[in-house]
Amino acid sequence: MIESNSIDLIITNYKDDIQKKYLKMLKSGSFIFILSIPRQDVMSKVIVSLQDIGFKTGFTSIYYTSKLGVKAIIVAMKPLSEKSYIDQAMKDGKGISWFDDCRIPVNRNNERSYDKEAYSGKEGIFVEGKTRFLSGDIKTKRNDNWLNQGRFPANLLVSDDVLNDGRISNNYRPNFIGKITGSQNFAGRRGVRNEPNDTGSFSRYFDLDKWWEKRIENFPKSFNNSLKLFSYLIVLGSRENDIIFKPVKIDSIKIACKTLNRKVI
Image (cartoon, rainbow, N blue to C red; front, side, top):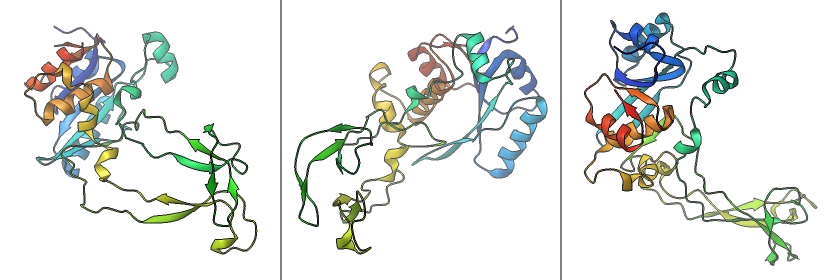
């Protein structure tokens, strides 16, 4: 028998007659991820039921789409036992989630150049160099270096590059840096440079496959998209050595828990 307040995360399907037991099993401030059909009527029924039982439901559901279709994950949490999230984290010795582990990698190779004189207060590192503006002036420039940490997790995850619409944008647009020195027309601005428009597949901002690449070495060679998704959810909702309860018979959850150093029941 599982003791009350002993589980750090539950991943399951919805069952009317057992959700109250799940609420007792979870530690305060812990999540339950419920796999659902991505239909409004089904999801709203589940969310209202969870709220009536006592779960906090003020979260955005997670949607995962691949070539195989769309999966919805309803997010709910057992209410805090302390006054705030910080107090709860201090009591438990850890935060509820650690979003840095769930950042979606984004490749930012392009550095942006800024007018050193006009943008001296902007964060970054100045490098000595020359750049010619529209007016013909030559100024020193600086580079604004991007951190390659990736994007924080969103409520949308994709695989198989499903958001690629096939369009490639190679055109450029003028970008204005600095003060307006004269008229409002194009030639009257100081610090004009060309900057590429957004290019590439929109999938890259939500790409579960990119996140997975960093962890694939630890996993079996044969896997499917479900293993990617459950691995992500486990990292999102728990820490190493936490106890994960999976009442559903999904082997991918068990494999992910073992590989990610979580205890699974």
